[in-house]
Length: 132
Image (tube, rainbow, N blue to C red; front, top):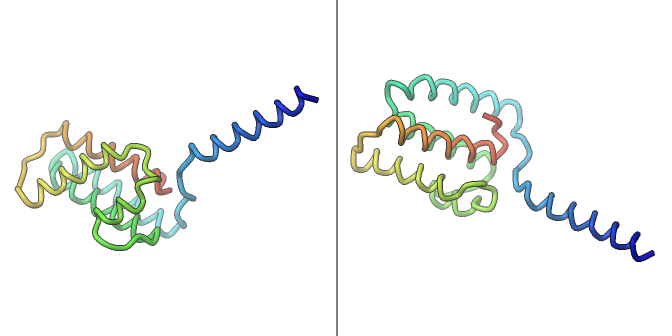
């Protein structure tokens, strides 16, 4: 009886942590997915020639998905509200700060910085169910 109880408890505990670990959201509706995918491809095509513009557009795309998910406010406010869904908050903060430096300080972006930001935005979009 004790072994059976322990096995049931362990299975329940594993299910709880597994559910908690997959913090992701449901996949977005098809219309939104099509929009996001079309922009994602366009931005990646542009990234080799205009890495700074790509970072700005990726931030804008993330803002759009956050809005579709029902978050309101500035991008920073939306990111704070949705923070629990992101698998790598620190990299996402880096990417958004890079975007701010591009826009406000006219920062030139290296391909390495742009790639790092692109990966952060990709993770965030996927965490929100965008499947890019």
